[in-house]
Length: 180
Image (cartoon, rainbow, N blue to C red; front, side):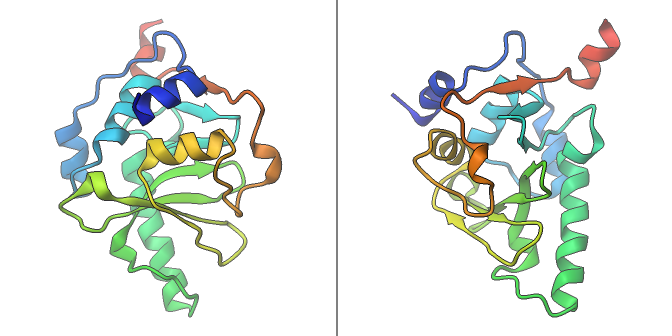
């Protein structure tokens, strides 16, 4: 059994959510190769939210704030501004690439070390209204399984985020919305 199987069992994806992505175009826009577990997650679940709170950024999304490339560009700007204003960030700005957001404005980042080994990237979260940077030593799918199962607590997320039966609620990708 793999961590992917664990996520499928814990939080089944919505039917018909499979998404095709031109990964080379996305990676060219970001300037990095993305982790395989993230690609699997996006292709399997598509755009939507876990427990009506946590959104995994998408290469294509009907909602601008959850688009990966745009979010990466904006996050870099914000992190640079914070660092220039004297806020302590325990990572170099170019080592952080956002992978998720919450309804509270918290950001979940990959720590992109080493850059040429994306499947070994780890996860860090940053609360919108605090200076905490809790680290998770695993990839995004492993992070989701640990957090949604309650095995790992992210102290910048509210306690009521965790549910006895976690859910994923998808919304249509832009192309699917146009075909209706």
